[in-house]
Length: 175
Image 1: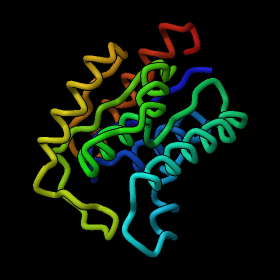
Image 2 (image 1 turned 90 degrees about the vertical axis):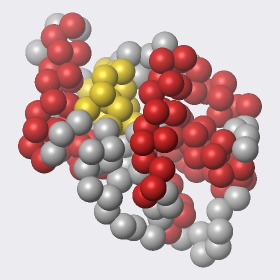
Image 3 (image 1 turned 30 degrees about the vertical axis):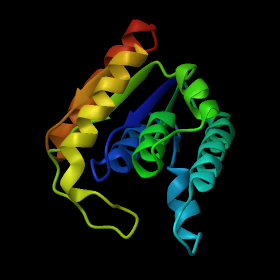
């Protein structure tokens, strides 16, 4: 089974693209565990919460992967949690960095910041989107993982992402 991570800053359409790609390819997608966790927290999050979210995200991905057909889309990855942790607390737990170095996604789609910001109680940094985008890109390059940048509005954004997934599927003789 192939795995595609949708990554990038807040409010860049990760959930929308994940859901649309999963529907298009008749498979499942892994939602962002942090949304439910933070939504039920009832207090400011801590570094321990980010660790719990990382563990929950990995467990959720394992659970949902059993239902996938040919390809699995994940609406976040450990890179999101590493950057979140480092920005919020100045450090990231070693085990998250170690797991991140061993992530086994066949492709990461780095979502651009060219969509309008959509306010949400869980989103924190509308003024730092480019800063975070550049950080994601540097991290992906340093990790040496296959990634492509996805930008544009609406259907164009989806078609660009779909084209990259089609290319991945063709590379593995699955399309």
